[in-house]
Length: 115
Length: 115
Image: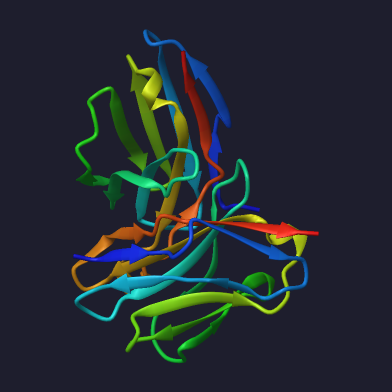
């Protein structure tokens, strides 16, 4: 069965510092991987996704993530944090070969940005 | 701007009331989803409609009744809810077929409070 773990339920960074949010997954087949962001009182918005091809994926708002099959990881990074990045971040995985209807979400990481 | 529109944004109801949540998308997506989200938690899948037919019901209590009148609309009928059903209800859609990567397009949610 697929699962997603996110190390750290809460991460604090200073404005201008590197953002690193960790995501590891388990899947019996190569998955599709996603990062979603949720601002307060809003729905989820896709930041970026990995399906096939280049393992370094660039997304919106300066975020990027690298798919490392050997480590079963898909960590999210941003070189310089902005105050507007404060939000909840969810890593997710879908297994298109067995269940296209189901997306498995990680528990989420709340990012705080300190001025 | 989200292309999945949910109404109402906020709903307060008593345990004996009947109300409905509505969701609309015009992206031509043939899969639509209802998720329930508690604070600081990931979305929990409730129902999936594929080609206007219910394909997944995640053992949701019968006081929640989904309906998909056409490929653009999704409703969630609520009756005799409990206070623990208070949550953010998210609608999402995705394409099916060759265009499907598992990416979900979310609405901004309906915040439900049951008194």
